[in-house]
Image (cartoon, rainbow, N blue to C red; front, side, top):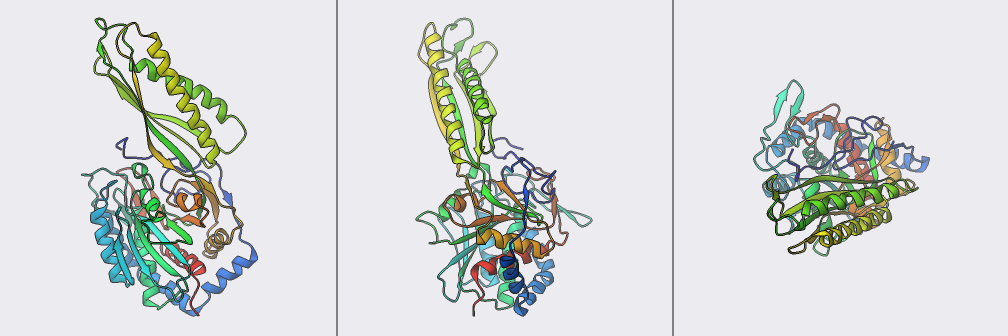
Length: 441
């Protein structure tokens, strides 16, 4: 895995489900098993019991071979971070062929298909992300081993694109009309370096307009429901100086010395903060580098750091400690030098994912719980960093649900997917979408 392209995974497999891995970092805290209230259980059961919806559910089962074909087709179109356009063009074509009223690719590369509702007073999104973590040149040819598919990106998140497409097909084939407009979206930039740029654009003045509810499909499995956004800040910290011979230029300020001090000061103070009561907070120095040889004073020293919590105040607090630590280290190294120019410091934010929490009792989360239970799964509420972070942070109801089946090796070249009753996740996505968009009367 290429360090600057791939994200860190915090798996909750021990208590969540080894088959339900949401993109980006997942909390290690035990997720909560949830039960919907009778009101929303009854509502979901009523929708699922309607003849037209039952027919749509069967259509999803009948479309399984076609869904698999779409899944493989899209997986074999490379979609590295910031280079998703070829996959986007094909996905736009597939959505148009499926019957969407209008399809377009926006200014950052998101594929957006609108299916008009009867009133259009509300807008509901069903989305999977286009990008994978794998760099350009990665072999993404799908390999079949018995009933299991192997390919980089086969599960995260290309499977979701196939699910979103099949939901649209099922609605069209059964003339399932909704009150609300529905946007079927393939979003760019969900993975690490993308910094959720696709969804950020959707909620900007360059987006498709108002969005009232957001359903992200990411990872696999059936149990997980992400209703809390794990926010994060990421930085590239760089110290620069003139450099020189380790002996001949001795006494000049050394960027490595400053970086070492910065790391020490930050983790010492951060450790105290992390141990204080509050939402889970993490910090990490993930990558560092610089220097040319053992007998050279480096001209540059840098590190990539990461901090995260679902509480934005906690993220802000540990960020403040970082800013203080790197400046303190700079001042101390410059004061200590015997000759030459001062070091300079460059602080570049490379990631800013907002956090947020939705109460499990709000109608949308309750419907997600009830829709999951309807298919015999065990709903588990969790926190993660996904495209749902953006709407959640803005107070817009949003969840991330899995795309069904089983998978493993996420973000590795040996990533795999097994379509074990995967159709149920597509049916769940349709059911939740109908509950939010409303069946037209």
